Length: 123
Length: 123
DNA sequence: TTATAATATTCATTGTATTGAATATGATTG
DNA sequence: CAATCATATTCAATACAATGAATATTATAA
Image 1: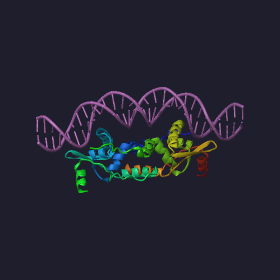
Image 2: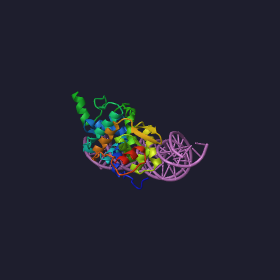
Image 3: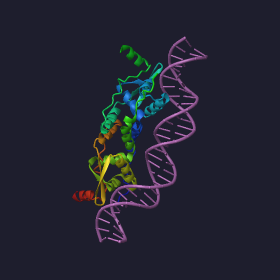
Image 4: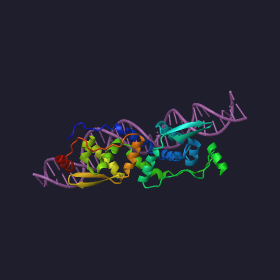
């Protein structure tokens, strides 16, 4: 019925790669934390409650995929999203699955990074 | 520093499930074909050039995840998308990865389903 | 009621991702 | 320069997904 009309699926590789990265609750949670701007690792540890090395592993995946970037400031390493358009993707699925977009901030947790300490002293 | 503040990641399960389904070039290609409305299996076979059983396998994954639905009409089984909002997700990644949204129709392939035969005779 | 067309399922194999535990790195302070 | 803090990496064990090959199912037509 047809001879070798196979569509090269390479063009979809970029998409599938992104999806692969997002196939993971911890990674999505991390990205959600970064919605509000850059955050240090200990911050994520405090918010998510995962072991440090586990978070680092997931950060590595996100970093190697180019989704996030890091910046060292003294002891802490701050991560930020490379391209905020990633949130359009997250929002689209959240909309698809019918749950409201989640705002991660304003939770009662404590983190010792300078960023959070400063905030706490103000409040 | 913190005790048991672990965020339940169950709430992200729906999202990750959808992403998991989309982590696959053939499945994305199938969904793209269904952008223009329902299509039969042989149609996808003609367009994508995969073996029939392979396409059926991927259709089964999409179907079991609830992303698509089928309808039998004589010999052919027509598939359609359950919730078109899925395309907002696909569009978002495509936008994120910087490629234009792909329109699958208008290709020079032949498929023997009544739908296509009728079209061909008109053209 | 058998042959055939369209589609689906099963199963075995291989490949790839996840996770935990342990350990390493690299700034920074004293 | 040794101790410490925040973070990263490695490795091994397990779980999960992808693919091919073969076969099954179901509706239709003769």
